[in-house]
Length: 419
Image (tube, rainbow, N blue to C red):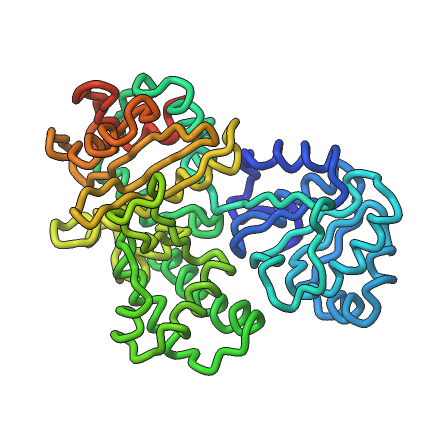
């Protein structure tokens, strides 16, 4: 597929586009980092067309060989320059550093990467102070529906008043979860979509992960991915996972890090205020794309809708990643955590801004909300006092309902319909 084309047959507005344009106006090197086939090349190609930048994709064998043979000459071939899939030749970064140190002109290089490039041990030098990194995730629900996706901004601006009604149904939410956000998956249905997900995971392991590290246990890595899909939305422990798979804890940690670097999973860190010994430190697991998680679980829309399915875990992961997407274009810096104490007080999602103000979110795979659903949020509210801005139970119902001071039950669709 040529740069700038979309598997949907038309281009959707990406919320990150404005952020990239702003970065190019005052920064010498801009890196758009994200999962394969999430739309990086399409977005960057459009921006390159507007600026007249030359396009070089390291997915092409000849281009890659040229880049590796003489990095310094390669990066001087055009100005401005787009280099797609920079992780294939990280040695280019040192040559780019040399070029941009000689000239402070902004927008000199626009890069894309399908792995967290600067985390790779093979990178000879970072571009600290010279490069801005912008993460691009698979399509958000708001991008698919062409809505603004401003729930995070709204909750820190309006607190408990950041709420709305929604006509979305339980079946509608399940359809969104199974579809996920990859443009190629959104364009497909049924078995064709499943085949895309199967091929995506296989290619990710065989191509990208194998490139990033020397993996001697490829079959066990695939077993780990399947096991993780079954534990989505849960606190994860590397030692327990290692015991299940017969792998050393260090190997599991290495695999988890690799899967994060290629944007398959996200580990959500635990939050605590101060050095409290009663808060757990283990991260929670989310899959970057809910469609991949449900495929690995063997679910379709019908089976995920059954009472016995793991809808709760998948829904929590879906919500967490919708919020993670919004954090990349929010008006203020907000960090994503979960909260759990050894006394089992728990809040699924904790959002904290730089003023140490907190919004708590519980996720419930139910069309009704009850007072008991707010137990963890009330615990957090009592702990934080005025720094607790609001607590929301996001559920599958259609109404916003008050449950006390700064506490609301809100439809999940508020994530992309409100704000």
